[in-house]
View 1 (cartoon, rainbow, N blue to C red):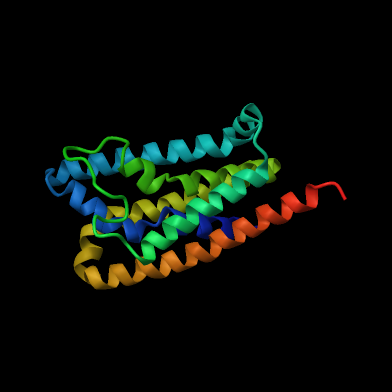
View 2: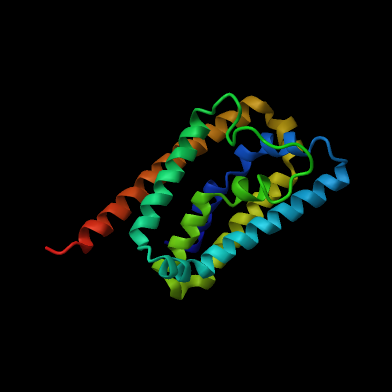
Length: 198
């Protein structure tokens, strides 16, 4: 996997376009200046969490005696469920009922930006090819910069595209995530079956 393909995968998983309506609804009660401060803070927290999982994922797996295959399969299942919810969103929204007041860490940083599928994806990247951690960090940073740029221009994009276009894009991203999740599941199963004694 190249840096560009890893960055694109992570960008799809972070799903900034799908998060626009949720972020706008959560920030609408705050003054404009405070909205930018909160958004920057939450994005930085999400980046820190994802970097932590990227660099520390290998040690976490060893500590919990988990194999890469189990993380790949679990990540694929979570990604599949999120992709399905993006394609067929429930009435209460993608993430369910959200708490009122100024958001802090939950649900904007985690799980909207740094969700379980993103954590599993970066953990897998870091454990499969630990000698390329610098490249994976760059890919994650590029995906995060693109996500931040879109979310900071959320109000403009919402006015420009409208809710229907954003829903269509989110469902398209959901279909891509479902395809990626199936591949993650197949890769995990193939690795597990290959490791079994003959």
